[in-house]
Length: 425
Image (cartoon, rainbow, N blue to C red; front, top):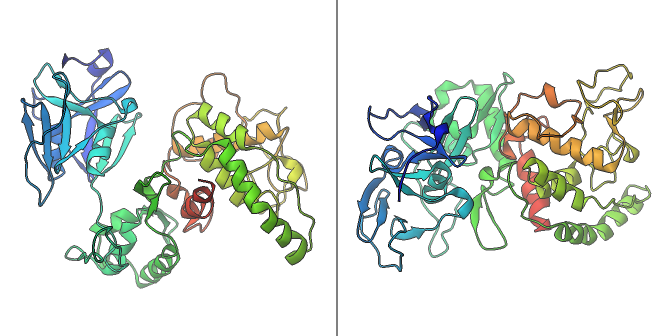
C-alpha cells in the first residue's frame, strides 16, 4: 500500500483552492500530485479545510470523516486487510473504479483522488490543467424558502448566513451562471458571500426577475436509479447516461404532439425527424462530451428538428452555429474550419455543414470549446467555425452555458436538463 507518485508528480505548482482560498501545505508535508493521470490530494488537509474532522483507524483500516453535528466512530464492515475504506458520518463511501482509490504515501499520509472528495462530501470540484489548480467548493445549503422536503420529515427551515438576504441566498442555491447588467458573468453561488449593498437597485431588481425564472426549475434532479443530484453539477464532459434507443423512444413519444402542433396550430407540414441519436452518442464519446445531453440541446435548438427559427433543415446545423441574427453575406471567415465541409452561404442564417455527421460533430466540437481548453482530440478536423471565438473552458457545466450560448438564457441549461434530457431518461 505504500505508494509514490509517478514522474509527473515532480512537476511543481499543483495548488489547492478551497472556497476561493489557497490552502498552504507545510514544507515537508504531503503535497498534491498526479499518479496514473489522476490528481491526488492529502485527505486530512482537504477535509479539515472544509470544516470536517478526520481520523485514521489503522485497525480496521478506516478513514473516518465527520462533518458538523456528527461523531467520529468506526463501523463494522467486511473489509479485506489491504483495503482502505472511507466512512463519512457513519456511511461507507465506495468510489467508482475510474475515480481511483485512496492509498498511503511514503510520507505516511492518506491521499485520495480529488474527485472522490466531491463524491464523499458533496462538494463541487474542478481541475484546471493549465494552471494546475484543484478547486473545491463547499456544498451550499438548500434555498431557505422553497419548502424543500426531506424524504422522511417536514420541510427544512434553513436560515441564511448573517449578512445575506433571502434573495441572494436563494439565488446562490441554484449555483447557476448569471449575466449581470454590466454584461459580466457571475456564478450565483458567489452571492452567498455578498450582501445587497454590493449591488445597485437595478441589479437587485434583475436578480428578483432571475429568481422568478429559476423558480420554474428545481435545484436538484432525481435520476431513474433514484440518485438525487444538483442540476448545477451536471457537466458537459462525461459519459452519456441515455442510450441511443432511449433517445429514439423519446422522440417517438413526442412525434404525435409535434405533428399535431405543426400541422394544426402552425399550419406547417411536419418535417420527419432525422435519426441522429447514434451519431450524438458515438461522436460525443470521441470528444468526452455527454452526447445524450448534446442531443437534448439539439432538440431544444431546432424545436425537435422542425426549424421554427432562422436555420433551415438542409443546413445540418443542429445548434444554431453562427446564427447570430444577421443574414450572412458569404464573405465571413470560418476561422480555420474545413472549407470542404463548412460553408457560410450568402442570404442564410448560420453555418451549413456538408452532412448530418459533420453537423453533429461541429455541435460536439463547440461544446468541447466551452467545456475545456484542450486541443482537439488527435486526428480531428476543425468543423466549428466559432470554435476559436469562444473563451475556452468558460463553461464546464450545462448551467454554465446560461447567458453565454443563449442570451439572456437565464435558465438555458436547466431547460436542456429538465425539459428535454430527463424526459429521454
